[in-house]
Amino acid sequence: MTQFDDRERAEEKRFQLNQEQEFKAQARRARLVGEWAASMMGLSDADVAAYAKSVVMADLEEAGEEDLFRKIRADIDAKQVAISDHQIRTRMAEALDEARAQIRAEG
Image (cartoon, rainbow, N blue to C red):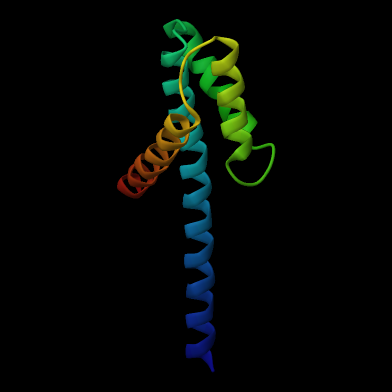
């Protein structure tokens, strides 16, 4: 019975680690997308970090990525920058892949 218990604990630990890595990747994706959006909106270097942080906070409002998309879309529209929904969603997907790769490389 101890082998089964050991395997079960190992699986639980692996699941927990995967969840933590995915959370970090989601947060990093929000930062990367925020930095991209800031550059598209022409924000100064000093404002990029603050804006990226606000995007990360907005992404924590609800589960999923729609809160992130709405924040970026609204801010880009407010600055009257011509970027399509498709371009935003594509950058979000690319940033998630990039963030996951970075997290894997770090740990």
